[in-house]
Length: 395
Image 1 (cartoon, rainbow, N blue to C red):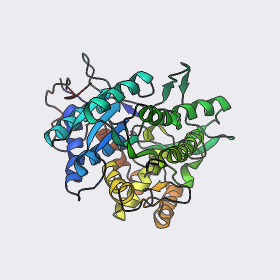
Image 2 (cartoon, one colour; image 1 turned 60 degrees about the vertical axis):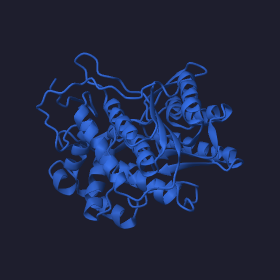
Image 3 (cartoon, rainbow, N blue to C red; image 1 turned 120 degrees about the vertical axis):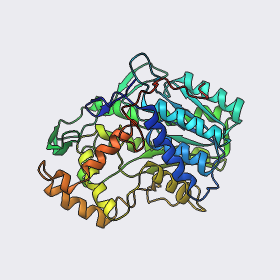
Image 4 (tube, rainbow, N blue to C red; image 1 turned 90 degrees about the horizontal axis):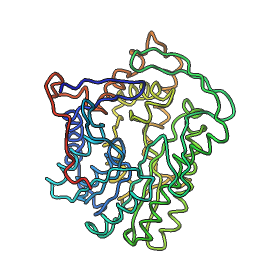
């Protein structure tokens, strides 16, 4: 079939297998062009098929030579429907990792469930023995609690007062004012249940109890802080409450693992175009302005550059540098004073009339479609392509 992008709001409902494979290969080629890392040997990535999770898996396999298990919730092609981008990404990764001689396995299902945790533990035990790095990179709008069965749904809302600020329709380029009503207490509770640290804790507890978490193991989860421009809807909103819970979980896990030489961190990463960030009002416009500034200063990084720097200069450096809260900061270039000063200046002037001049909205839109395998150099999008792609080591 001929596969073209079809969008619905901030998501693309189609994905292109060849385009996704080329995007994965581009990341692999970047990592293979960098210095090797004396890092992990056996890695579990929970939330492994896109964004930072996928990049973490690529860095583990191709910079450190690690064996990896990826857990993710993606769907294969069915009838006229393409597979999800994460499915195609994972198929490409699995093939490349096996060709490179690394063990590589995929488990597809609900990472929040006890069943998937048990299946993962069985696979670790039979194929790897144990894991010495656990990356937690789950991004989901919904969670079914494995013990109570309660269904939680997350929301992106401010706290206390109605929030208004500029936002952009990145498809049309129209800059408008976003107006978001504040969250209720129950919405805050549910967002924390979905996006906070409880499931991360459950994963580490399950791995430890099963005896498949190696002595001296490291675990890391990902977060974002960002500038004042986005704070009301992000860091000081419902998502921020969930991230606070995630960071508190890291401190607890670090205490628990330290007796066996283990470590737990939250890494605060740069704002990037992801399926998750595209859903947050204000953020796409901020990222577009940020990209313009950082590209002009030659500071821009994508997911793979960020994760290589995290692994090589933070997690597996001689000493892991953290801030006063114990957080790893690879958002340091984004948050430089000169970068933020220029972004704020652009922000004050941004409008529909000048958005393409004062921001990198074109770059934002291109990266958005590349998430789904489109707008990728070297791909003939008029060619007939088979949407049914098998994942080599799917369990």
